[in-house]
View 1 (tube, helix red, strand yellow):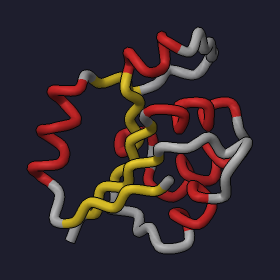
View 2 (view 1 turned 60 degrees about the horizontal axis):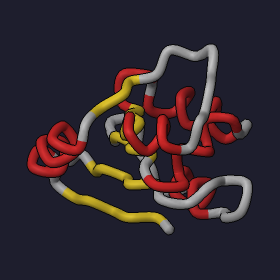
View 3 (view 1 turned 90 degrees about the horizontal axis):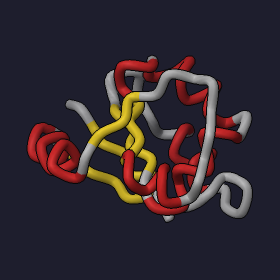
View 4 (view 1 turned 180 degrees about the horizontal axis):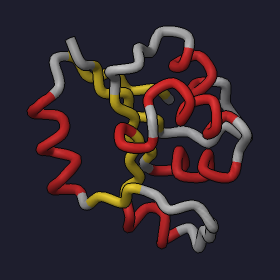
Length: 97
């Protein structure tokens, strides 16, 4: 069973991403959206990547760009349409905020 974890708050102001990692499986997928995109610059991102792999971590591109974020890491940017497709494919969707 694949779960989709939607991370909506920054790891700099909330423990929601840390809490999410405690229940995630390696087959799960993560989407950073809203202020959750700030987590790309937080050490928690490396823990998430070690657990689910880069291929299962996604960032809503226009949320990232709207916040003026910059990173040297190659990220899996997706559109809102791709978010819908990922939610349709998931067995369970959990929103963390």
